[in-house]
Image 1: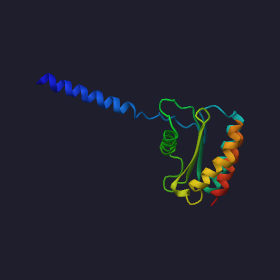
Image 2: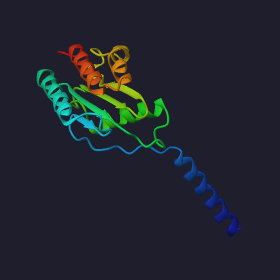
Image 3: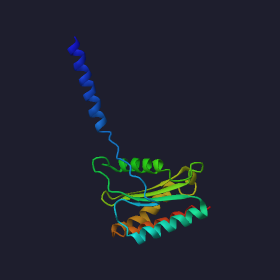
Image 4: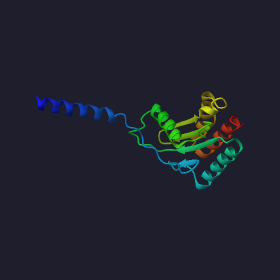
Length: 167
């Protein structure tokens, strides 16, 4: 009887380890500033320019914005849904936006996966709806990204986002 209990425990442990292996979450990197270019698509001058745009907008409005490029592990982000969960987790974990105001905006993209997303904090959803964020992606970002003009696409997107979210 003891061997049967041990067998059941081993079988149960194996079942849970296999089930959990499929639920692997992509590890989150640490931010390196308002622009975290982990995919290395921007030059230093471009990062400085984007960072200065973001800082100027924050000084005027208190809204915080982060731009992130990633080259994720293909085993952990296998779908657009995984990418969306990852982006939400990333910006939440990093604390983009003031906690009491929830006024953060995150723009994240992966050139390798060809995914892009704009996350808007609850405090700004009245100024930048999901539909408006998607319009910025469709009309400003994607045409530039198709030409691999990542800096141009992000610059245009930030300008549109900042116009939309001015206090």
